[in-house]
Amino acid sequence: MQTTPIGAASRAASKVDFNTHVINGRPDLEFAAALQKVSPKQQAKAKATATDFEGMFLNTMFSEMTAGLKGDGPFGDTPGTGIWRSMLTEQYSKSFAHAGGVGIASEVYRSMIMKQAKTQAAAPTPQANTQS
Image (cartoon, rainbow, N blue to C red; front, side, top):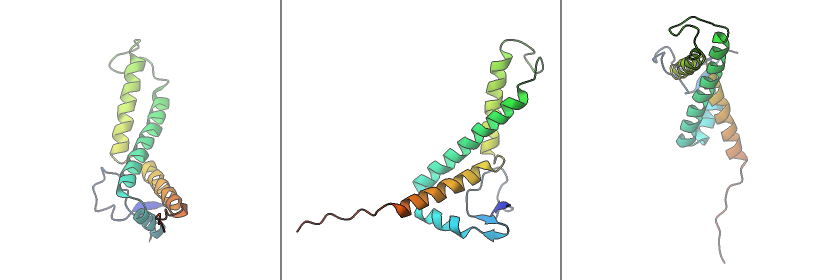
């Protein structure tokens, strides 16, 4: 299933688009309805969490890619190379995630919003206390 943000071509490619998605050429109206049920504060928190999740995933991938490297780079094969490389991959992953990543953040965000909307719909509405 291919998902593409609406208007993605007109937006800057350096930002993750968390708006309504298009799935197989059609707007994701279920997601649009869920966004209406979730507060902007919860949406912002979900965006940050989704981006952080993608950053952690990318950090794991970059760490595995560089795990076998020995002796290359500015520090050669010294004891500090491992620490330097781990900090470098962490920064790479954060930069990739904030620049748009590989598409994981938008799908995680959609899942979180859908779950929150369903949770809020299923929660009983508080009734006003009336005294007679």
